[in-house]
Image 1 (tube, rainbow, N blue to C red):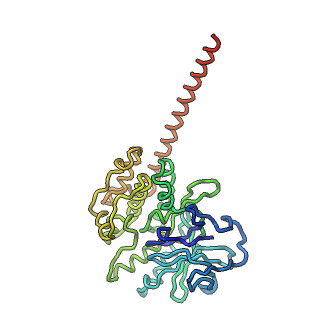
Image 2 (image 1 turned 135 degrees about the vertical axis):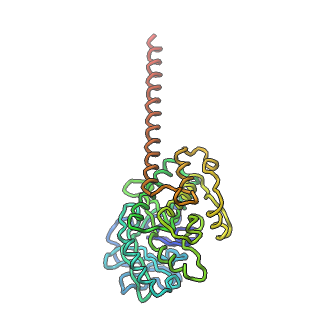
Image 3 (image 1 turned 120 degrees about the horizontal axis):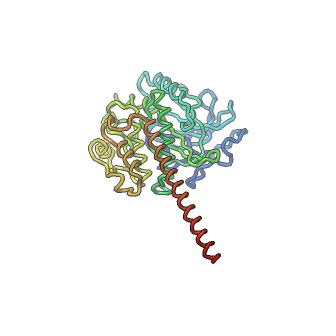
Length: 358
């Protein structure tokens, strides 16, 4: 099952999403293996202080088990779906985020589009709706670690791992963009890494689609603050301008920079200062903070961080293809070195055999 998240875990800032864990960094189901069925009777609820725990909501479709976390968009709960006899991650959107009269209709419209996104690297959306004005979203239950947790625990990732993760994120963005959706809040907290079917670092991208509804909501409020996470926010988004898929590619560039160096391009104590940095400041070249990075990967990262969207790669598919070529080149290089090493060892063995025979 899912463990309660502490500050810094996925969903503690401007987005929330499901994760499972035991508090040790690597998340896991709490006594239940991933995919094991049936779940059986509803588990005993814990005393969390949340009035919703143990309650049935959405016409009895879900029973709240425990709180997972909360953020700017709302709160996420572990919930049992009795009809399907399974656990889900249930997000409840904050009421103050949807005060416009047409907010509910727009939420339904966007979730209809989001639910059509079907890709191995995107989280599955099971259900959505409103319960007497309370908007909710039910998603699959995940077991793994967030990319943020991995970076914090390991520091910079090796190139092979970075490329493998980055390619999957790019593929997920391609599927999302194909449905006309811009994520708007891509960050390491919204990327889960699973050990699934024997494959390490299987990526799941979370929380796409919701940000658009909330962003359109706040554009007309007194604050006018853009929805998203400032550390990973593209210049056009920081300025409140229209966004497109290249906005997500900028965020991917920040993530790749973070994975490669263990640090983000810009640091600022205040949100406004961070947003201004994305708009006006030039990031330290990635080669300076990660000198062992292959030149092709360094060039891709810096292109993704271009201020002008037109100067960035044209699509997520292009990014994935370039990462794939880099991965292939590294494999070919490794294979060549293995051939050379084998030849050297064979020659050494032959020389030794000859010397012993004399």
